[in-house]
Amino acid sequence: MTKTISLSPHKIPKGQRVYAIGDVHGYADILKQMHEKIHQDIQSNTIEKITILHLGDYINRGPDSKGVLDFLIKLSALKNDIEYVHLLGNHENGMLEFIDDPIGENRSWDAWPNAQYLISYDINPDIEDVEELAAVIKSTVPEAHWMLKKQMPHYHVVGDFAFVHNGPRPGVKLAEQTKEDLVNNREPFMSTIEPHEYFIVHGHTSTKDFQVDVKPNRINLDTGLFYKEGVLTCGIFENSDVRFIRVDKNKV
Image (cartoon, rainbow, N blue to C red; front, side, top):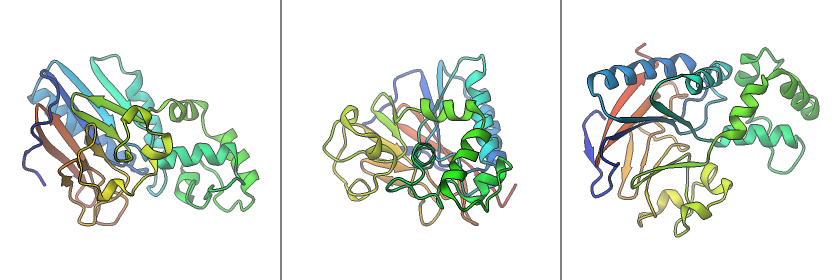
């Protein structure tokens, strides 16, 4: 999907633009290429205020989780006029929960971390004892990575748009949503067609055809990068319109 879509009557404030990037899942090189394309777009379409926002799920599945977080930290340290926002995804949240309580309920350590995540930090993926694994991860992963995850917001609002990893619960004000609502919730959010408090921009649930999914109350930018045919998608929101930049890992 490359055409511009109108999301009227929802609007980004005049003079602002938001670049929202879908789930990255450990593909650091693809993310860097996306940022190169974004900066090319910025240079050819200048505007007063720019936000570059990531919708969560930076780790697991792909080959370089560590590289993705290193890159996000470098972005946040840049001294420029761009606002960078890194939202919390369920994989980051799951990792934090696993480290805090590796044998607690709902701690699926085979999902977070998975082998690719561990290998990216030079951690032995064959450690079977979950408490030992949690201790090794905690001591090996740089403190800056833990701080980044702990500081990630659950949502970000610009004008009539709310950017979240997933959710929210229908009929509940955004400020009243729980962390669980905004990082793990799929239903009834995905099947609800009633308007939310804001128009929702989200990831979390990969689209089946690797194309952006636009509904009357939301837009899904997770185009399944970690799948063989998947791509990374960025939605560019300005005024009432959204257009797209895509990076296909099979065409790099």
